[in-house]
Amino acid sequence: MTIASAAILLFLILDPLGNIPVFLSLLRGMPAHRQRVVLVREMLIALGVLMAFLWGGKYALEMMHLRQESVSIAGGIVLFLIGIRMIFPPPEGLMGELPGGEPFIVPMAIPLVAGPSGMAAVMLMGSQEPDRMGAWSLALLIAWAATAAILFSATYLYRWLGARVLTAIERLMGMVIVAISVQMFLDGLSAYLQLAGS
Image (tube, rainbow, N blue to C red):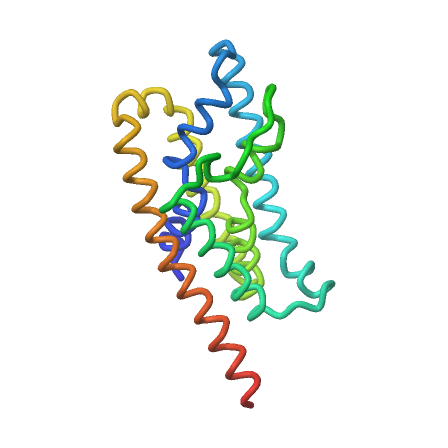
């Protein structure tokens, strides 16, 4: 996987366009200055969490005696469920009921930006090819920067594109994520069967 393809995969998983309506509803009622402060704080927390999973994921797997194949299969399943919820969103939204008040870590940083699928994806990248941590970090930074740029311009995008276009884009991204998740699952299963057969 190249840096560009890894960045695109992570960008799709972070799903900034799908998060625009949720972020707008969470930040509604706050002064514009406070909205920017909260958004910067939550995006930095999300980046910190994803970097921690990228760099520490390999050691966490070793400590829990988990093999890469099981993380690949589990990541594929989680990614599949997220993709299905993007295509067929439940009435309470992609991530379920959201708590009131000013958001802090939950739900904006985790799980809306740094969700289980993102954590699983970066952990898998770091554990499969630990010699390319610099490349994976760069890919994560690119995906995060693109996500942050979109979420900072959320008000303008929502006004310009409209709810219907954003919904259509989110469902299209959901279909791409479902395809990626199936491939991730099959790769993990294939690697496991090869190990079992040898």
